[in-house]
Image (cartoon, rainbow, N blue to C red; front, side, top):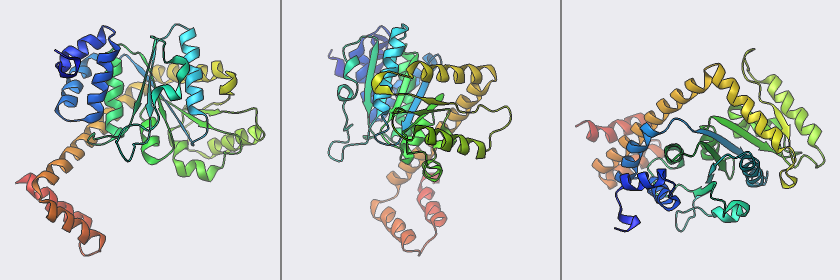
Amino acid sequence: MSRRHRPVGELLDAARRGDRASLARLLSLVERGGDEAREIGRLAYPLSGQGYTVGLTGAPGAGKSTLTSALIGHLRAQGHEVAVLAIDPSSPFTGGAILGDRVRMQDHATDDGVFIRSMATRGHLGGLSLATPEAARLLDAAGKRLVLVETVGVGQVEVEVAGKADTTVVVVNPGWGDSVQANKAGLMEIADVFVINKADRKGAPETRRDLEQMLELSDLADDAWRPPIVAAVATERTGIDEVWAAVEAHRAAIEANGTLASRRRFRLGEELREVVARRLEQRARQLTSGQRWDDLRRQVTEHRLDPWAAADEMLAAVQA
């Protein structure tokens, strides 16, 4: 039987034995969504819970991929296996990831201790916000204990995805540290560690000062974790030890005070809520004729009907 048509249970067993091709196939099914993706989620869920996810996000051009590559090298030198989910925008033509795995991190493409996968929204119900945690759990179930989730930009979806990691690293550049822009992007709310990448450039001290001021103005409790600000030059592999030390310090802190467990419980609850909402929407679309659905949307956009009334009608078919 070809790998493409093997039952997902067999693929998962093979992935847990180290078969990279089977793992890649499972991730493709997760991205696609549907019944097979749900079966993978059902099988992988009880096998997960041992891995740790680190999200890396920041403005385009901040050097996130270079920093991720440098972190991979640092972790491999310590003997750790690493998996990377590179969150790319969807191609308007194919729905697939525009940026390929090996284009991003060619230095590690032939390292069996590194598994890199680009992800895009594709056809998954709920898009990246649901596909990414499912993919991370699958990697965990397959024995990947460190998962780096790197996003291309700082749009709403990218920030949301990165913020679902156990530790979130926000990457900025000298001259970028404008407090208004940072708060607009929602980065202050999700950052556990700040990295000033390209710190050899002019303006690095000013950027650090701006970030410090933003942290002073934030609503941190006295005993809350205060995000450290680490300087790095990823292209030169300098500051990488300090970046990972900050990640490890954050992990130790949230494991010790119980925040990690509570964060994970909260994220699972939110994921369940989103799954229910998405499935209700899908079911409502199936049971409401396409013409009526479009008509209700049009009435709302033309201010002839309020959104709650339109939703009531859309969901009436589900409740029937």
